[in-house]
Picture 1 (tube, rainbow, N blue to C red):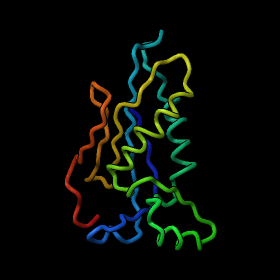
Picture 2 (cartoon, rainbow, N blue to C red):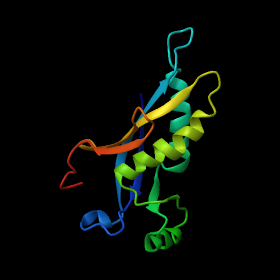
Picture 3 (cartoon, helix red, strand yellow):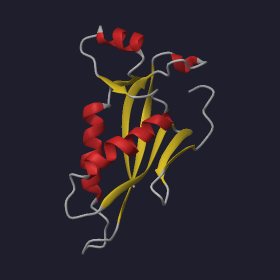
Length: 157
């Protein structure tokens, strides 16, 4: 497992509370990578390889940017008025659960294809939105997705 911290803003379109507003978090993402065997050094893969791939992607695409649902036209239009801006459009609302799912199913497999000599799979992603609230997207033994909320959302997010 490798942790990658980043800062980003988002909002939850149609949220019933204050998360409908643009706001930000100091996220921490846990990437759980498994392999079919260990190499001659006794490791699934070097942590530095995983860090380079996942941290580089996060830094380039999400860190100090805004993660928005591609259907959130008002927020996208407003932020595009600001120069410079960094936006990443997701196919669904950027909840912690959906961010974890996107990293697990879309980003992780593409990044791990770049690692040769190892049979690696991203099996679990935990997205910490605050120090008290996280969500997990994981694959079960049949490689089916399941998502869980790991702790109650804070009232003051």
